[in-house]
Image (cartoon, helix red, strand yellow):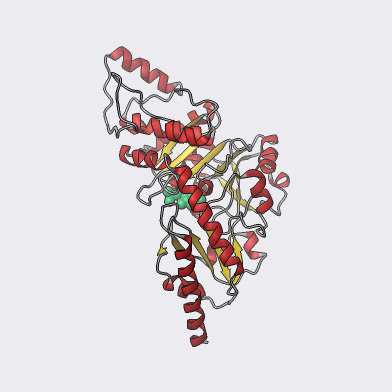
Length: 404
Ligand SMILES: *Cc1c(COP(=O)(O)O)cnc(C)c1O
């Protein structure tokens, strides 16, 4: 079945579907687990090993992943509009894989200062030891052109950024990087790949924590790396092999199962989050709301230009500078679970750690004081969620008044 020229919703449903054998078969690809791959004869084994060495997506051992993995890879490649997708055991492993595959000792990488914070740990604990220099910059304020050095190999971005959802001008940044022969990698977790196409906007590599919206049910760890060329696929494949990475077939299956319903889930996350963001923007206890689909968000114009939708993430800063406001508020919530990660069907609340906010230049230049709560808006009814938030605001106000 050709999926060329179809809409993304159709591709999400059909990409990677198994061929029928003897005229019948399952709808979704089954879980194919293996360690040993067995061959019909030694000539076939040799031929497949040769194909693999030349960069073809051929499995000659369990670590490479068989049918279930290949089906998920095909579906994500179709979603991201890329050449090929490599799976990784987590979103962070996908990021580390890209950094190790594209950077060598003596290289310099430019990283947006608003990126998912654990990227800085990869830098400190790993890249530095291998003589790779990472420089953090503000994509909004610093002129990228002037930061690029002869040894700059990689521009690493995330748009919208973690915690404050700063929207970056990826087409402009990527065009500058490409002029200087610098590779561009973008973390695309926020949009689930459905509402944003980094590869079409100039990136060479798009990464997602499939743990979030692709799997979508808070029960799987998975990372995906989609590249725009055979050369990059080979480079990343070699590093994957060298690191001995492997992804379980059951986890690949659950991610593929989640991906089939990505469009309907994200549409509801988007609607609910916009309702909550509008409610928060009107609330007297809120100083500022961070959500690019809100008309007053500074990233709104770029978001409208480059994105076709928004996710379920909304952050807000309290007007009251009391540093305990966020924790009191979160403890008063009933339907929001307290936890990191996001992208499942359920609502979550998390206080943004002040030291993580301080990494963002847009935060340092702004109010920079109040506590910030990040919400992931799930698939509950938005009126129930807003009622819960209203109750928590009242409880927080009372508690702060009593402790004043
Ligand atoms: C969660 C997250 C990651 C890491 O994914 P894990 O699967 O939790 O390792 C990477 N980038 C972003 C933007 C994330 O939100």
